[in-house]
Length: 49
Image (tube, rainbow, N blue to C red; front, side, top):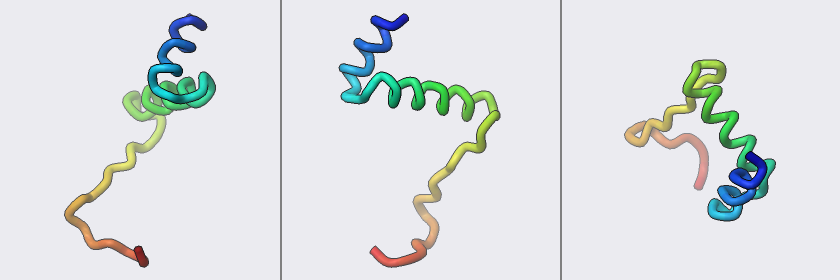
């Protein structure tokens, strides 16, 4: 498993820890343990650019 994480992290240009954090966050969102942040592309923009 360590080799697969290392290879995938290298391909993605991320560190091993960042990759694990991403995988866990995606899993938690898909299994409804965390709320999914949906971007509303047609909504009004608040704030300054």
